[in-house]
Image 1 (cartoon, protein in one colour):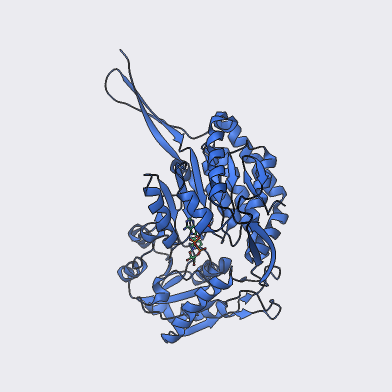
Image 2 (cartoon, helix red, strand yellow; image 1 turned 90 degrees about the vertical axis):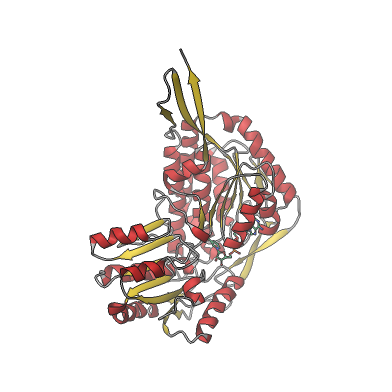
Length: 479
Ligand code: NAD
């Protein structure tokens, strides 16, 4: 595999920097390979290659042919799924079951958007007498993509597939902590026959390669997923060029449990919503809001389920893997230490399996509650498997608490009352609401994105096709 090279203009080449970044397996803390630390000159080369491709074979390709290439890539990903899942699991520490689901999801992105490539229509507008108006959708041009380490393969599909379907030429800067699956999928894209320059991938540090990408004047659009702090930097850099960007910056998503909720349906989904990927999911359900009269009963049952969870290596494939790095573990442990210092009752904690390698970056999933609304555990994105339980009195109180953070990404509402389902779904300030279900990370068909500090713009579904295109209105006058 070409993991010591960067991919520019259809070729695997050495980075200009001659520097490398060690890649560590989170399950055992051991370095097992390295990736190039790309620099500004690599980024410049990549952006120029992307620009040139728009004038070449890629730019001339009709949408149906773009779609065929993407479907071919989807099939190649599916054929290589087990290998890719092994790569992803070792690189991120996520349990094999999760890694397999992520690879299937990546293939699905290319399937969905490959199928859509020749179905992106404009519109006509009735206007004045003797006029004909059409609105067409055009690609932005060169799009930059900066993605995090939590779902490298899924993110590759989520951000690149709609950009390619709409005819953009892309430059991807994956995360330095985990990007090996992205490099393997890039090999497969090359095998599928994407023309040179359509996809360029430069690995490296955010502060070097990422910053160089967002500062490059040759970019027409940026798609960023990661922390709010870096999101601000990306948006500030984009503003220098009045360049649009889509930002997906995480959340503090609530699962709201009303008295009439179906406990048996809700409990496993609430557990999965915080434990999936070790809680390192932007749309993790990290707050569980429970109506006061069922609080003790529901939280008791939830605690029992969390106590039964087992944590181990990606190969052990238990309920929860390690966190991505020692740094991320320290961040999460900081929240736990603060919770203990604040005297928050710890209701339950999962068990670290005795077979888990001692040097892995493990944190045991835990449930704390009742957590005061203003406490950091109720307000801040932990990005780890720590769940905050918060009681509420009535519907208005639930909505107030649910909307009472800086974030607004997704929410879950659990109630049998149909009118309440609709009232609450409408009142929540976020990008997705799941009623009697919850879908952290799932569903390519479903437009996804946040409000407030969770970011802006939409990915997934047809919304992403709109995001990666810009309209042009053409006004014809005839006699
Ligand atoms: P981050 O924002 O630092 O990194 C995300 C991506 O941005 C990476 O590819 C990184 O290399 C790049 N980057 C970093 N600095 C950059 C810069 N100055 N210019 C351009 N690109 C840059 O996130 P992180 O440090 O990996 O994680 C920190 C926190 O961010 C987490 O604890 C979590 O709260 C949040 N996070 C959210 C998501 C999400 O899906 N929304 C994903 C990862 C992390």
